[in-house]
Image: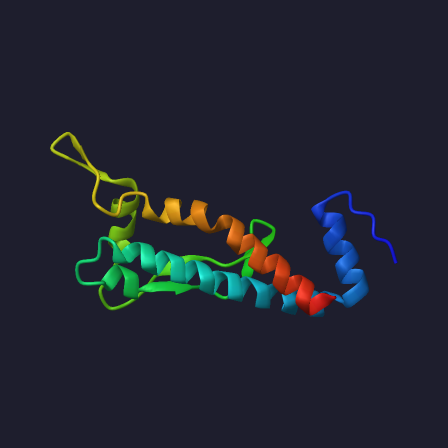
Length: 134
């Protein structure tokens, strides 16, 4: 059997036609969860470098797979008793105090981790889909 791929949407349509919509969604969700767990582990180790109480690291959570702007994905968020979600954006982007830009130790750690783990994340998703559909 040969498959002609002209774009991502055509690929998705062909996979859904061959394997069924529900089966394709289940396999995609499984792959996203595995890749999300990898990213969560990488992010936790990146947070180790500047932890104080470890609350920011401990409150990292992953959502269930969902549609995000028309694409299936997983969200990373912070939830827990210490309410670290209120401080994460300050670490990531820095802040201004008395007109002086402050860049904390954890400055841009999420963006750096995302960039560094992107290739491995995609490979995990690709390998899981390949393993479970073929």
